[in-house]
Image (tube, rainbow, N blue to C red; front, side, top):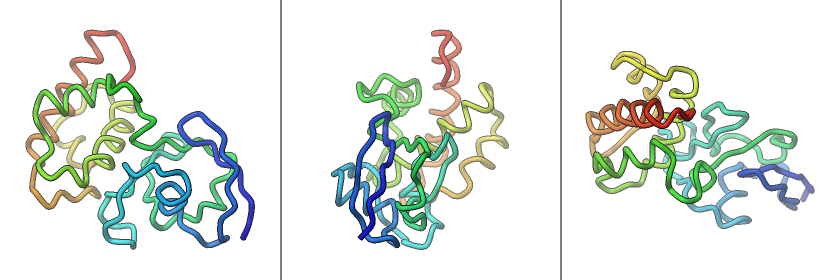
Amino acid sequence: MSKVTLKINGESHLLDVPPDMPLLWALRDTLNLVGTKYSCGIGVCGSCIVLIDGVPTQSCVMPAAGMAGMEITTIEGLAPNGDHPLQKAWNDVDVPQCGYCQGGQILTAAALLKQNSNPSDKDIDEAMYGNLCRCGTYPRIRKAIKLAAQYAAKAGVES
């Protein structure tokens, strides 16, 4: 076991975890942050995405012990009150079907909108490429991202 302090959703947490424990399991099993989902376990599906220093990262393949000093944001930390423009747009467009992949989808979209406040379809498709949705809600995801950009622009806030 090794002790590591992780900054997750703005709070520091001292964890005692095996050195090779993936961040995904530290979040889910140690901190009960279960919005980050397990699916493939090899970093190709996007269900386990968290933001590490603002960058979408597959948490199933990142050792928790190596994340010290980085800012980790889970879906629970994006906007705890559910008032982020993406969360509002996701609800307004009724994006989720089963919902399993949506945490990773929303966090990836948040990183995109932070870099590009008015993305084209091509920009969205490229940014969201590594996020798989078994239910095929891709058209609604694209629509919600564009709507979130509009919400953010109207409110004068960063997406």
